[in-house]
Amino acid sequence: MGSVNQGLPWEKRVAAKRQACADKIPAAWRIPDNFLDNFQTPLAEKKNNLIEAEAVRKSGILTEQELRITENYTVAELLSALADGTLTSAEVTLAYSKRAAVAQQLVNCLTEIMFEEAKERAQYLDTLRAQGQLVGPLHGLPVSIKDNFHKKGTEATIGMVSFLDEVSQENSPLVDILLKLGAVIYVKTNVPQTMMTSDSDNNVFGRTLNPWNTSLGPGGSSGGEGALIALRGSPLGVGTDIGGSVRIPALCCGTYGFRPSAARIPNGGMRACTTSGMKFLLSCAGPLSLDLDGIETFFKSVFGAQPALYDSTILDIPWRQVSAKPILRIGIFPESPAFPLHPPVRRVLAEAARLLEAEGHKLIPLDVEECQILRANEIAWNIFSLDQGALGHIRSSGEPPVPSLVHVGKVVEKLKSSTHLTLPDLSEMDRMEKLAYLNTLRAELREVYRKMWVRHDLDVCIAPSAQNTAVAHDMFAIAPYTTIFNCLDDGLIGLHGELAMLASVLTLIRWQCYMLHVFYTGERGTFCT
Image (cartoon, rainbow, N blue to C red; front, top):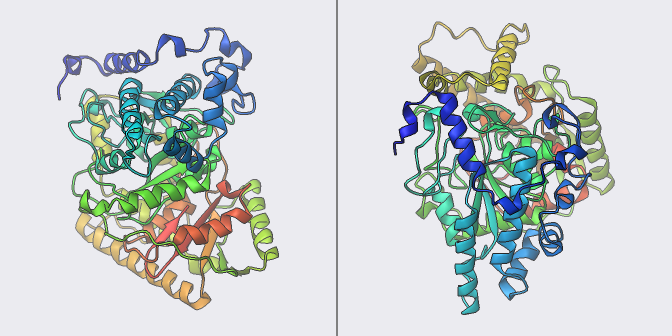
């Protein structure tokens, strides 16, 4: 859908978009001009812990009741209160809308704002409830979504100037499912340019900050979701993950994040800046939340809606609840010499192993050579490089690449000159030859992992979410400890009573699990959190 702004320089188009977004925050919800005097500014360059400083509470925007709603309820408790009438969707939606508005002013985590539409939706749901009707298991619950999901009547720019002013004409399948389940969609959240870095900065909406330390990044590409949820501006959010984009924001922002196998949660009908039809490593939609029960609620609800009826790329496998084994055989993923762990990550991994072993679980250290972490990442990097569509969008609009994208390119080029690389020079191959070769290597790698899993009779495995915790803006670069599992995932699904098993592991290490990557393999496929 066109706009008169399309003939303007990209800087003016961006300024108009930012102003339109800012205008959707009611004047009464805007923090006082002098509020930031309480912090070190500029926020992006100085260390500010907005969570420990209780910045949202002290902003004075939310009432005590609204603070209680957003701070004292888990997702399950909110749904229970909404179902029995203790809370109305209107008051819950208002509370989270106001909190999201404050979060936006502090850390710049939002893209599309739908407060008025959400208010009308919540009132409609309350009317139904008063008549004894519940739309579905998420009746009345505010849910935030990443910017790449289409929501009819809003834009899905994914931070790319070339997509400005294109209004979505229909919903993405997952959005339709969430609405059918009774959710209230009220905001969309920020992403990095091209959605292929682990930062969240773009020329359209700017940079998202980490609420735990505003001089650091929130991770990406679902960084807006991570930051919003960390500030309790959303009880449950949905991101996507093609190389760590749900798991890394969970790591950086201290939330739970779950990346399921490909073809599990509807991921079709979304905005992408890749070339149509060029899908090699598959993106996966997955939830983020501050409580593990919220993650389970999301999967149980979405699976129950028969998502294959909405999205032809989804395998129609219902939710099953299974009992977790009392004693698990847990693989401990090794540290790769090519990607040494930073001390806090190494320490948490060791402490998690100690706690699990103390509970009687059997721990099996996995062999670093057999796990082939560097080789898997080489395969993934080469596959990603086959499609230059995103860079084409940047060039066509005239906008410059953001610093984090430039940094990723430099890091990858530096790694290509490493003497430790396992793949030969592929520059003489054409794209089809290269794709066939890389797919062969992926298949061989999956077979290595299948044999390793069977040989050790593993139930679950834990690994670091990344080499590091949150880092300075633009400096996250690559994600070797998450990308490997996207490379391994072939979209075939195994058992899916997985959360019962994962819950038993994460409960033991709940205080630190956001620094870990826990994955469970059933008969086929890999589930990751």
